[in-house]
Image 1: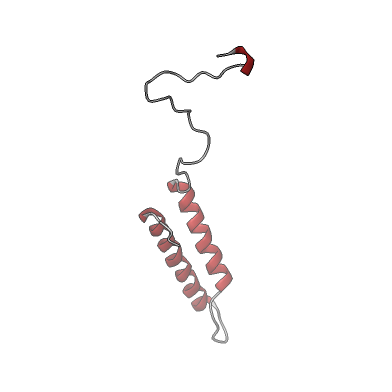
Image 2: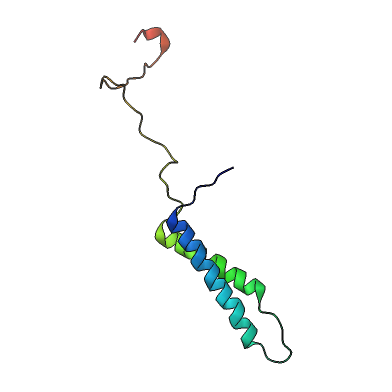
Length: 90
């Protein structure tokens, strides 16, 4: 199965991952006492938040393919008219 991803979406994903890595590394240095790992849950939460915020701000997800579309007219250019009832003989 092949998935298509736009360059903008890929850039947003990379920025979110980089911010998550930065938060993870910062929380390692911020802890005092015994050496410990960083806050993984906080880093993942921040990365997801950054990806969601950038996606909303930059308009991802609005491809325009969904929703109701205008009905197409025939090739000869005449408008399509629906008959009110079958016995009327439109």
